[in-house]
Length: 326
Image (tube, rainbow, N blue to C red; front, side, top):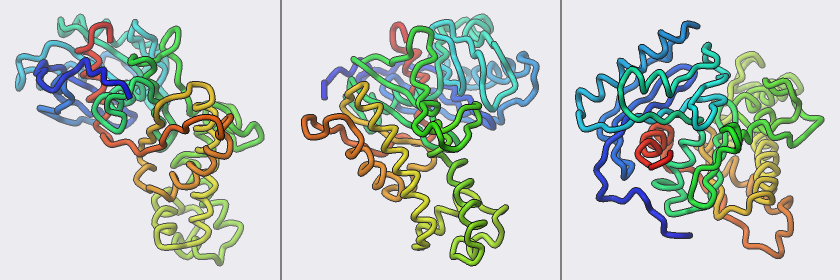
């Protein structure tokens, strides 16, 4: 791995980082070395009026600036499609606003330089500089939670595509005849590997075998959730473990395609499902090695869990704001 570290440990510059999700906004003041100085959290406004959302963000920013007056920039990671570098949130899957010029509005309201990026791009930057990929110039991040997100750092820079809409790995089709996805396609990685997929597979398993061990855990197919399937797998239930094997298989297929296309130094897997450890990552690594192009003639990148957890988005957004050019 190369040693490029533009944000060194002696750099004490401060920025506000905001990570906007469907139900909550995580915010904090972050040093350029990735250390979180202040943090807070508020519910995400559900009103369709964009003024309500912007007002809530400005209120949080003002609160954090009052505590840390030396803040010099604002970085936002937002779920959904975000135009780069305009910072316009075109569409968000779990937020009511549409076509929101967030970068311009926050800059006008605060007077501070502002960067708005996709949340997974921000998390990928944080993991590459301060987390599992520290020091890596070529890293892929997959976030596997309710859905699947993705981000890349290539050549030491965040990769966003021509207009900022790149790295949507969750909607890369890995099984054209597979399960339907919320985006309208079939067989997207998100439809095959996610918390939503795990709950669906669990319900299908209980309906197919209502006397099985997983059914005894749940009592009813309608009560199956991803965490319940995880608990059953951890307790040794063979049906639940088989579901993780199945999801890990498809995750490995997706990783194989990405490695074949981009040849990164490493692949980092984050999101809520990474807490299941080798239940998911074990079969994923096996499938990856099976399906990657020319495995006998290349050094395979390690597939490792993320380190920064749910704070990666706000850390990445803040430190991108302190990086010239974002």
